[in-house]
Image 1 (cartoon, rainbow, N blue to C red):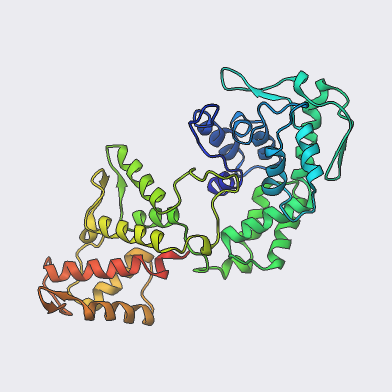
Image 2: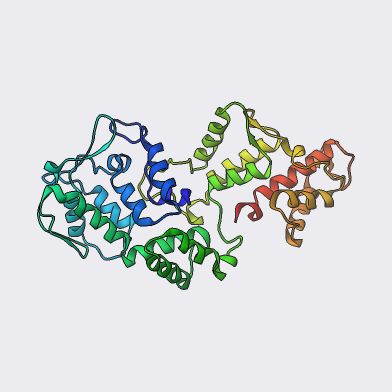
Length: 375
């Protein structure tokens, strides 16, 4: 859920002047992690007026005389009601006026400056406030953010995103409706919505219907091969660089919409090749700064026949036996493979090169197949 909400309320960690790099860790800790299983209203309020979000979407420095519409637009389009909710450009403009008056001080703290806040009655997407004085501007802003957190369109928007994340790229409308109802009934609390989601028949039927994004694949591969962090912390930076090369570096998406969560966004030759090369490197013991047992290490006492290698590799890497189609696919690959100019044998001696090549090819095929690349 930390990953989900961090993506939903995305902030790119840039070290440009006036950027977010120095405070991004605090945003993750105090906004995302703190509220990931709490309630969305509290998370949205914490996000809206956090120095990291104020810097990222130009809320800091937005004044009544010179309002910046960036955060006002993304608050509606991405964070709450969604792009199809029916708000207008005028709503964005009025929202920017209402949210004006914030700055970031020398200690990188968010500070409300009453003199910079627009004063006067405002109506934004069905929300009306007298906004009668600058001193009461913060209260009016908080009321507006709370209004959006509780809006029916927000309930539907978040419900659909959760269903996409955990069930299907095209989730059934009936499930989205159930989740939105739970969100509204429980006053934006997140855990009750998840209970409905994870106890639903749609979730139970969703196995292997979601394609893993690159970072998920990298982590899943590392876990399957029993890779561990080494004594040199740069090893984890190496893993980050791999995810970046595959298109999904942690906290590295520059746009406010966050990383895509559907398969069509990730199915490219470049990403597939990056993950293929990573798998191959890790299987032969690559990643010098990580604890890596290599492709003979993840199987204790590797079997001495092709059939049992296939079974043992599937059991270890995906926790089940191969299907008939999967076994046939591996047999086709191994049957066409050549080693030292000869076909790979179907039986071999323990510790032999033929055994190692059989384990390697079986693992490579499995870790780059739907059995591993979906969840």
